[in-house]
Length: 231
Image (tube, rainbow, N blue to C red; front, top):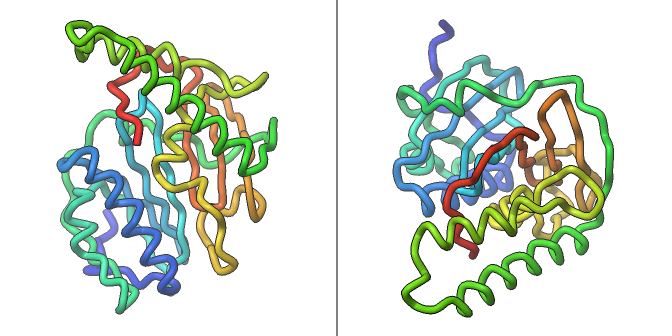
């Protein structure tokens, strides 16, 4: 097993800031969240699972040096180790990961099957969030139970984006994680899409919504989702 480095040096300030922002969002939803880190040469892939019905968030970034390791760590500890001014991130000790960390999307074999502009994706996310809130507020107080809200979220976020097979939970997750925000010129993360917008890729049972800031992957066979709290 390759020894873990004490820290990794990121390519620039933007990479450090984007990594920290991604981890802040994950930890805000789950203080015990973990991420799987895969470093190969000057690239770092960070995998996490936000509470959006079985989706996986993938953020790729550039490193200033070449590394080679694969480890699952505490997202909170990794966040604490990010020094944006020094453009480095301390790598915490490995932990026993949850089941999702052992079943990641494939690295290759992806076929592009659809493209979207940024406004289309942001509008879709806004519509479903607004619907969820409106329908939640319309419920009688005694019906606003965890089970009722989970069922409502599953109904809404299991719908597909347009005529594509992508469930709207993936779009919602991309929006909540900041993957759909306007792109700065120097952005170097997740270059699976153009300067704005995103693209949908498929590989076997997996679908992946790629954007300039990261990707959301989901298996077509994903069953009932976890609780979803819109932002």
